[in-house]
Amino acid sequence: MFRSPLLITFFFLVLGLQFSHASNGGLDRSDSDFDVRSENPQKVLILNDGYSALEKRLELIEKATKTIDLETFIWRADDSGQMLTHALIKKARKGVKIRLLIDNFVGAKDYTEFIAHELRKEGIEVRYYNPTPLFRVVEAQWRNHKKSLTIDSKETIIGGRNIGDEYFDLSPEYNFVDRDVWIEGDLVDAVELSFESIWTSKESVAVKRKKMPEKNDIQYRRNSRTARGRAKYKSDLRAWTKKEDFAKSFVSLDNERVDLREKIRNLSILHAHGQFYGECTNASFVSDRPLSHDTGKTKRILKKEIYKRINESKSSLQIESPYFIVNDETETTLKNALKRGVKTTLLTNYLYSTDAIYVSAAFNSIANEWLDTGMDIFLYGGDTQTDYQTINHEVQYSRWGTHAKSVVFDYSSIMIGSFNFDPRSYNFSAELAFFCDGNRPLADSLRFDIEQRERDSILITKKDLEEDPDSIDERLFHRVGFGKKVLYYLLKGPSNLFDFML
Image (cartoon, rainbow, N blue to C red; front, side, top):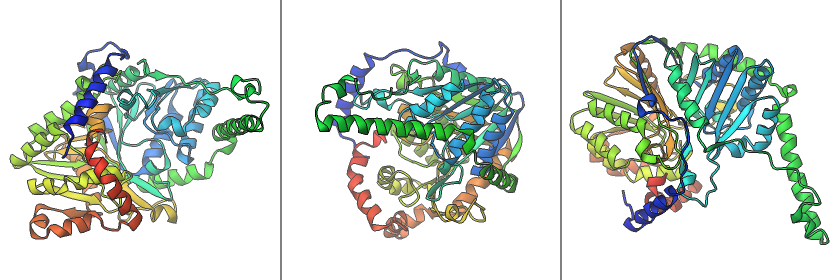
């Protein structure tokens, strides 16, 4: 991939300057505390479908008696976001201690400080991770991309899903096939430590709601004699009141969707046969340390674990990642595996199924290179999975893409987590993952589910590249409309230039 030496030099100059203003944060622990292995039995449930994933979260919240800790990159103020919010409020009123950690970059834009304000009235603590303004280009990139829900320090759900309708098969426009894992066992302690490390970092802050605009505020008093000044005050007051009204309505238990909950429960029962339940006696939980701007790449614990496992693979790698943009280390690691004869398949999105056109533009530039190495690439087709029942007709025929972050190593070991094969997970975002080794039934279950998704995808191989290179472009642009193609070509240059930040 093309990288401008001048741009990279400037980038790292800015990086160095901003590190000089960095702050420490989080728990004072060693790296080994974020890479924990256990040979004790861990109960495991793989949550492949969105309805089961949402229902299991609601069940955990409802059974909690002491604590609930929830962290997410995104929290939408939609139906699923409201259902989970209502469930949390009910538990808070029963005395359960609840902490919500939401990444500021995207999550706080939808789950606003107005909603957070209403939750604090209920005794629920809400913090946003890293509200650094965007003009501080480098520091603003450090994100908490982890997703976990832990109750009573006994049970947890981790994986790829944020909080939002598109992650739970409820959106009439666009949905993700995704994957989580529920765990009960002593590894939950490690998940709690991972959460605590971010929660206690200086970058995790309680953001206060903006105060209601008043006529005697300086900004309005100065212009109160002009029609424009008076109009500005009235406009700001209307906007503030609208946000407050929405937040109060959103959290009000008077607006509970009992009917929707019942539909989700029934659909989760319908899809229950597709969820693997069992035990893992050789399990690991690996998590990145908190990113407090002076740690950065030196604390990328999970990435190193994934590279190690790829290097140790002997026969096969089955990767599912919504985005695939490689850095030098990832490229070397995967190409070495292919040279050793490790059969490697990738399931990812293409231009039609992706939620990020700029990522697809960067991926298309390297697809042929990876086909030439012998990697088989499956492009998720954009429809719901075969024989998969959804909540209504609109969801069934919406556009779909993969969002799961999973790997099967040598048919016997697995990874399920939040890690994408992209620069943000390599360098900028704190990630987590669950590993289970030497468990063939568990690995087979994950492998079969990925293969089901592959059957709903477009396969391209080295043979296709050799026989008809033009057919590759046809597949990469299959079903893509004119407008999306125009946007793709507008973004292609910048996407390749700045691929190290996508």
